[in-house]
Amino acid sequence: MNVRYLAVAVAVVLAAPVLAVAAESPAAAPATAPVAAASWPEFHGTGRTNISPDKGLLKQWPEGGPPLVWKFSECGQGYSGVSIAEGMIFTAGYIDDQETVLALDMDGKLLWKAPNGEAWSGPSPGARTTPTFSEGILYQMSAAGRLAAFEAKTGKPVWAVDLVAEFGAKFGIWAAAENVIVDGNKVLCMPGGPKGRVVALDKRSGKTLWANTEIEHTAAYCSPLVVTYRGVRQLVTMTQKSVLGVEVETGRLVWQAPFLPKSPQNALTPVFYDGQVFVACGHWSGGTVLKVDPEAKTASTVWFRKELDNCHGGAMLIDGRLYGAACRMGGKDFYCVDFSTGKTIKTDATIGKAGLTLADGMMYCLNHRGTVSLLAVGPDGFRIASQFDLKRKPDNYYLAHPVVCGGRLYLRGGPDLYAYDVRARQG
Image (cartoon, rainbow, N blue to C red; front, side, top):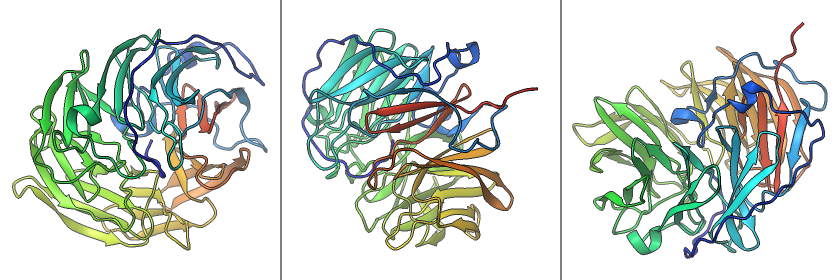
């Protein structure tokens, strides 16, 4: 996830996985075949589109929200979301002073848990990142910068790299928060250190394949995406002071443009379409669309709007419309604007600062205090179809982005993971 309030720590040694079982099932039912076969293998799903392939979902929820299938309350402390693959659900949290990766079955029963280094105790302690699944292996970066691989079925450690020791990793005051991405045989991430600003590791061994040292700036809290533009497959991400593209195969810098926020966050996953990229940061830093020019190795401003800042919730492009939640001081408008021009289509001041995802033509939003909204989206922007509240918490408690997968809505807040049935009933 891309979250706020993170901090730096040192990486430590991995211990063996521990088995346990614990879950609460208010509407316990065996996992159906579609649920068990569901896949959401990384932060924002396959290709990081943040769009679920699910169909046949509710267009409006009953009063009080959709049916709760189960609730698991031993995730530990943190803001990690969920990934889903091969009949398992993965997340992370702080348990017994360790950053811990967990695996559940589709009925919310704990299969295994495995530590990934010592827990960070600085500002807003808690695990930040969602495990990434690829070909039977999980990859997760701890807040301290320990990038580790585990067998997905067992939690057995495969390899680990201390990004601080290996690359001189330099994170901001809120620590490492990057959801690492796997492309082909490479695990891609941004330590931000002088011995490796952006690096590629072999996903089977953890061995360094390349390390870019020409980038000047340190890591922010951005979870990247991989795109192919003009024949070049590239990692698109943000540093503390810029947005850039790095060639996946070689690590060379393809382009870079300044983006200097008023608050040192830069947590938003960039939105890339047809050579244009949207980036934003909170607290009146604003949002902007840039046009990439690989020949000039930079990007130029198409439009900029100060009020379209975005802190942790992410932004989405749907049929030429850009959706996101502002977090500027004095207002928290949820917005829909034209991607090409930045012109406002619709705003709403009641939805709040929210993480979002899309499924079956509907947008699911979880705001930072626990209000869950279902939005119908279309040419006129959006319409609130339904809402319900989780247990109310202080600001920035609910920072994990919602996930819709296999007919279920997954919501995380602190130690609690909720699974709701959002399928429409037939007949």
